[in-house]
Image (cartoon, rainbow, N blue to C red; front, side, top):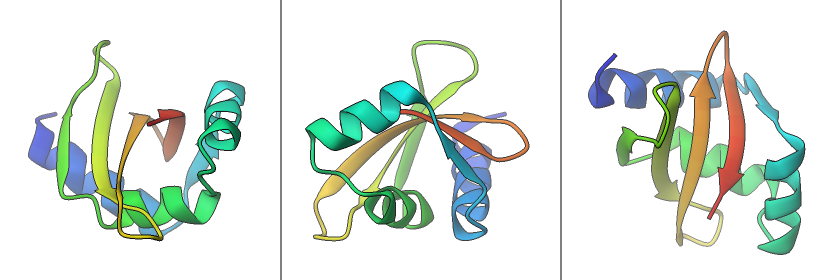
Length: 86
């Protein structure tokens, strides 16, 4: 899968709300005052996507609820697994 395909897949899963969050992601969201709504908005409207540090990870960047860029690290499976946010 290339970055363009990953971006399209991420947007599709986000719009359908096929998203689960790891414990680590929930911790980082709490620390950074990021809501699930922020994550859904950022992923649904992601403008860029690049490969992460592992073969199965992607980093999508899009605007959160306040319009600020939010980077979301995900694994694409039958939906999205949110690994972390920053």
